Length: 165
Image 1 (cartoon, rainbow, N blue to C red):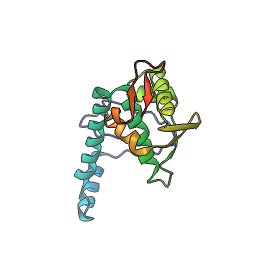
Image 2: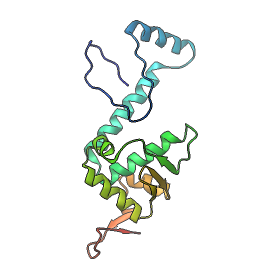
Image 3: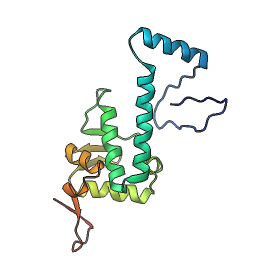
Image 4: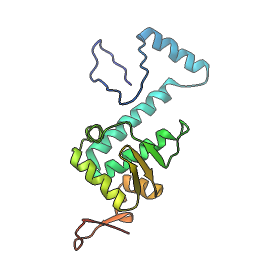
């Protein structure tokens, strides 16, 4: 999950599910990079993909509202489940609500409120606390991209600040 030029790493990680971690010394990485080129693959492409993921995470934390962050997180989890043979409409969350909150830079209460808003809006269902079913995938994706008005809208006269449209 990272490369370091120094002997010390700037950050750490915590696994929320079963994980296999590999560590390679720099000479081994250089050999692997040369092998990637011989196979017609590019280590630069792989690293660029990782950089793009880091940029997306910075955008998520810096510019999106709480509901947009949660929607983006659920879409991302669905996309990760799909290549592994999972159903992109049903997501098993390996993380607790607190872990999700920490990952998204939110409080536990805000994550819970956002998930309940998405449920009330009909975008998701929660058959089990760790299982989310995406009912309206395009709308959830649009919400995560900041197109909130097309999915849910503030409704000042309602007891709930969010009204489904």
